[in-house]
Amino acid sequence: MKVMIRKSERGYSAYVPKKDLEEPIVRSETEDLWGGVVTLKNGWRLDLPPMPADTRLPITVEARKLADDE
Image (tube, rainbow, N blue to C red):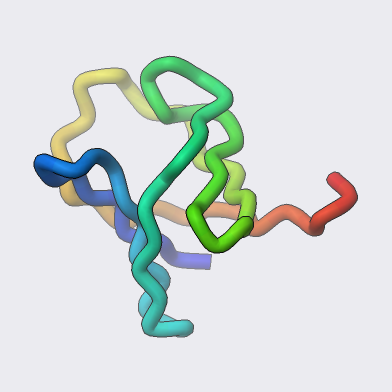
């Protein structure tokens, strides 16, 4: 699914246009956000693609939503 990742003074957030959903990212598997699983405030877990740590934001990426048991 397409996900826009943004950064504000409150931290990172993810916006999913098809669901008209914007949620803060509360946990990241990797220190630089990319190439791992992030957890949104609503409990969704998204697998983000590997990207350079200095990737400019905002950016739209193809992420995979993980099921609760993954």
